[in-house]
Length: 111
Ligand SMILES: [Zn+2]
Image 1 (cartoon, rainbow, N blue to C red):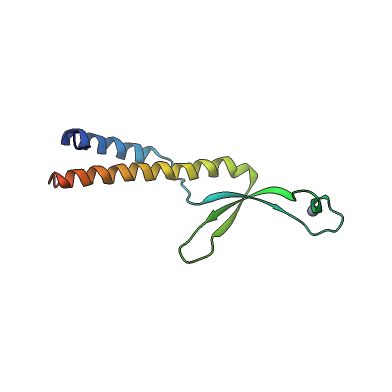
Image 2 (tube, rainbow, N blue to C red):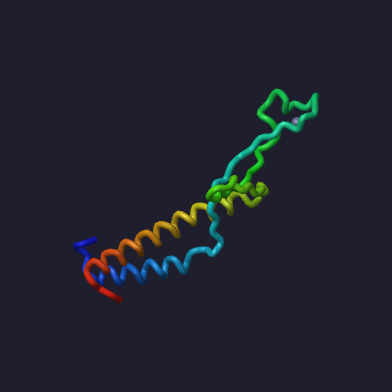
């Protein structure tokens, strides 16, 4: 980044912000987990097999607390996957914006 001109860095900042604005505001943090459950009925086939399912849950960790689990209906699984992936895109853009600003600050470019 040291070899990039200040004008180029400013242009890159503007492109990154435009990209941010184009992202879907539906964004999620957490991980999608799959569960198979046993119903407990003595003659159900699930006793032998892997259980009923799959059932999907979004697991969201919170500092110092148990992860929060939210049931995700099958029909919503693709959308939830997309919204989880989009968080990585938000994070990558923010990381690059911070890196550019860091570089500009080192060059004593105050604006
Ligand atoms: Zn069962």
